[in-house]
Length: 194
Image (cartoon, rainbow, N blue to C red; front, side, top):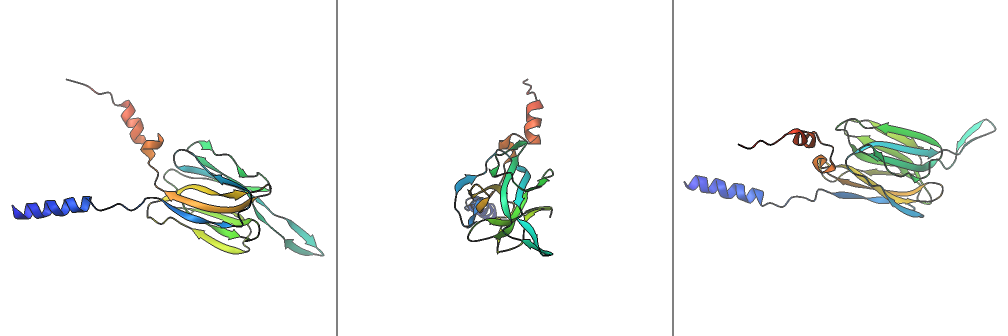
């Protein structure tokens, strides 16, 4: 009888342990001038578009890449695209995520006096979307808690491009977002009463 009491008290104390905060924030990097933004949407991020501007030129047979930067980006939540943050200028890179695929790392390069120069988004399956040029200061964002994924990006942009960027991480509760197979199963079950 005493052993049952000990096991019960132990299990109750385990349930009373505090749960870590399931959300984290990777502080913004970059110069930070311009209009603030924060992406938003319901459900999991299912697609990404990034525009990069390359100011390339040739001078006496030499190739120069001066001031390449990220001009804008867009995230898709479920089947709905967010607004474009920044602008749709330059070359577009796009990636659609597979079912149960999520973004677990945001990295790149930024110039402390103007723009985000390179943006790399990495998924839990190892796929990446990479836009921009690898110059200037590196940054690397990832969630503080296992199982978390990118929920939104925030920062600032001006008329030419993205001047700062930060990442917000958390859990996605698919049942709440209305796109779970559990929701579909519950809708098709008709209760019977005897």
